Amino acid sequence: MPFLDHLTLGQYVPLNSFVHSLDPRCKILGTMALITSVFLANASPWPYLVWSALVVFLCILSGLSLKNVLASTRPALLLVLFTVIVNMFFAEGEELIRISFISITREGLLTGIKMGLRLYFLILFANMTMMTTSPLELSDGIESLLSPFRRFGVPAHEFAMMMTIALRFIPTLLEETDRIMKAQLARGADLDSGGIAKRLKAFIPVLVPLFVIVFQRADELAVAMEARCYRGGIGRSRMKPLHWASRDSFSLVVVSMICIGGVVLDRWIS
Image 1 (cartoon, rainbow, N blue to C red):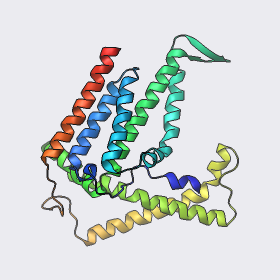
Image 2: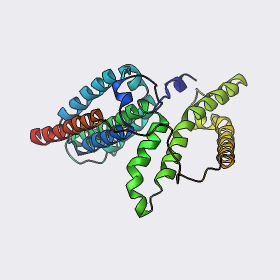
Image 3: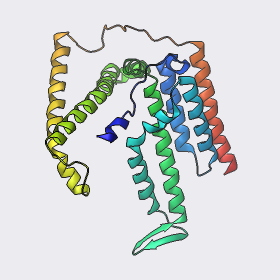
Image 4: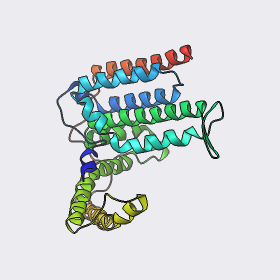
């Protein structure tokens, strides 16, 4: 299916770049700072222009194509559009359009656009982090950041391992979905025509074998982990230990200053 060619949201792209070489903890903390600034922004367009420029700059530093980065977020555009539409109808104000009992106000339209942009930039920043950080590095970074909370009973290693397995399963599931859909199309299945109800019904022969494969893979993974005597993270070492360098501190400070500057500029203009 053509749309499966674009389902690369969060897929790691191995390149030799400045962003790829940064410590995963730096990238995770920087992403959290950016996401926080996104949620603190008001309706002013200036923060969104700053974030757009930052995305372009990060693409240059990481060697990623801006076109590919934006194309990889296509699967999330439906969620963004849904967010915009939902927020349109729940704000009072100057009425722009009325269809029967449904009205769209100026304030609702602005709120919907603002919420949609917030969600899109959130997805975009998280996507760029995953595209420049391997699943293993991402897992180690999350475990390291959560390790101080172990004294409060937070299972840092188990949480990181669960996330790593989920990230590694995404490409496998996409390949299996593509294979099953091609097999169903070869048998004469029609997956593209008709309304939403008809399409959902046509996807049942795809979803059933996909769920079976998911459970089979999960069972095989559990057996493999037991065969290797996996008992959690106690006493385990890393193949590639994390190392925080001066460039990580510099990068995190720069990103934090951009986030603070964007929020302050937004508040000052508003």
